[in-house]
Length: 598
Image (cartoon, rainbow, N blue to C red; front, side, top):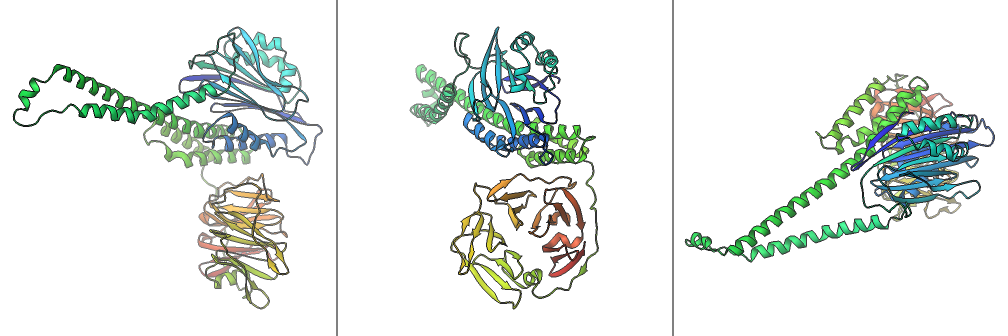
């Protein structure tokens, strides 16, 4: 692939990529986002038609990595390692993963190796091995870090690439200066083998940083020197106010007399005091200028880092979307929507007339042009007012005040308030308080019964589980095994998994308390202010009440878009109920219950 170039604050990176063609049992890819580089290979022992494709698994891995990596407040060996481990934990056990990454933080290089592979470096005329793992050496994440020197060239290699391309070929190719030329020299040797799990990326660092170790010393070191520099800078900043106080105190000791004789006294003022005052003023000015410049530099660095974390992945999604336009329109549209969302969510974080703001605006215009006009609803329907039994879910919800979320099973309708979870019998309409709020929930928005248990969605505390018995419901326990932010959650539904809908349009799926990978595909217009998700154990579909677009969206439970129904009453609809067997949907809106035919 052609060589590319990235500019850093005081340095730059030039790089080129190599990846072999996929096979039935192997797939590889080379990845770059900002200062993060990676090469990945995935292999299967035998083909499996029921298995997700290796390309899909790889794409999900990189999407997870972007989500974890670019939200890190501080990027260190430890935090990046945790992000990598979270990004790869959902890969199926029968897929062999070789994942090699490098992150350039100014003139410091962080390396990570999961599975097998290696990283080599050329410094001057010397070629050295920085990190390597061969066959049968364990599966834990291996890390390393150290300082870079101007002109260093680093090659990340998957295990199969390292096997097929000899050290002599690597050494000969590194006699060339440009990464693109190095990649062309190595490409012919890589393609001699029909292995689909070969990948490599060549990166050349240009920049001048700290004083580096000499050629006779080890090229890599730990992070202590970097940490000391940070501590020293912090110490200098802390002492600045104290230094200012001393200067002001010294200036205060020079008192100029007031009154009619001031002019004469000033003319006779001691020359030494005048000189001392001038020195103090100059120091004050220099110090103030230094503080201002330091602050401006810090703000500029923050803006630059934020811009890289937004623009780079957005451009990658845009580029992927354009590349897939003629191959897979659905995947292309999804990539473009991701780019659009990322740019719109962060557009206001940059100064209005800055170059960063202009670049964000220009890229957003390209993305929106590629998306084209939003598609019209596939099914605009006429509704009629429905006649329902008084024991129906929506009829009870219509007649009940104070309910924060409603659901039902075959015998009861359930709703939650700030104080209680209450059931209403469908047989006789009798109310019964099942659970009292003893500080269990704070911002409840949904309740759902499943297998004699009750699950409560709270925006503060997540998903609470109440186990049912003949004597009532036990004390709440946390359903989720990991901490998950559900502060935007608005609705809960359960089939064999727990589904959570958020106000920003995201849908989360959990099975046995752990998050599952789930994404919506084929939806041309993104969800806008959705309020309700509907599914249960008897149907294989998911329905979403999308108030912002005045529609109900129907998805398969794997996330594939099927159909949408549009009507104006859905804009202010409060709840809905799907009756697939009766081929209709009931909608509660404006104090009335409407019927939508399927």
